[in-house]
Amino acid sequence: MLDAIDRGLIHALRIDGRAPFSAIADVLGVSAQTVSRRYRQLCADAALRVVGLAEPQRAGRTQWLLRLTTGPRAAQGLAEALARRTDTSWVKLASGGTEIVAVVHTSTGDGPAGHALLLHDIPRTAGITAVSAHCVLHTYLGGPTAWSGHQQALDAAQQRRLRGALSEAASATGAPGARAALTDADSELLAALQRDGRASLGSLASATGWSPATIARRLEQLRAEGKLFFDIELDSTLLGVTTQALMWMAVAPAHLDQVARALARHPELAYVAAVTGRHNLAAQALCPDPAALHRYLTERLGTLKTITTLETAPVLRTIKMAGPLPAAGKPPKRR
Image (cartoon, rainbow, N blue to C red; front, top):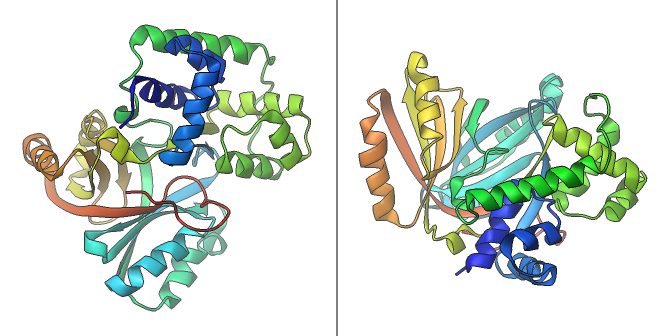
């Protein structure tokens, strides 16, 4: 299990995935060498990774929640094939291994050309017995808004100190400059950050052909405009999570926003989004055990009378998180 330093480091990376180890060390009261060593150890033993991601709406991307039903023999291979694609994230095996749930990213303005997976690839895949695709209309929790389970280590004073130090470091790079949309020139930078959100300016310069100073200014610009954020991947069992479930809810449109905002405050949930389809609200629960999930469903969700139907799908395995698979192409062992 994680100790106080590990948890403090994870919380700090949730605040800023590119926070210097020296700033984190100052807040935790340890040396920068200790923070660096713990980070490397968590990367090796807990599948920790910082990933830089473009905010979908500002990047002209549309997200879809894709649900595929298949036989248990075909599910594993199909899930791994989906995970290897560059237009997918959060690929999960659920419902006893007969359902695959994945997030698919498409270009908003590309029409059918940007929906190859939805319109072409999936219908031609053997072994699939049912397909449903739900467009994500609004994300209430997830992405830039972190699960609170990552944010319980640093107290308010420590968080203020870290944010203050990071603000001073950011101002030292100079003004971010005029607002500018994401362009094709940013694609190599974003791809490198998706592989490693903590890549050095020198590494990012090598990947893009830009100078380190240009990289620093562009990073500050994209972050200041909300076009780029940093997420962390981690084996959630080390945070005491052994039971995950995807939930699909139906709520009357007049109450949808109110219910979604209420759910986004529940510490058991890591994701809440309004989607299209018969079930117009999707969520993901992270609980310490099945009994805790049962209590949540009956004692928390059960009190929201405007939720008319609820479907739960236990998650057996996460094949892919937010970032691309490792270079070897083999999914890391995550639960």
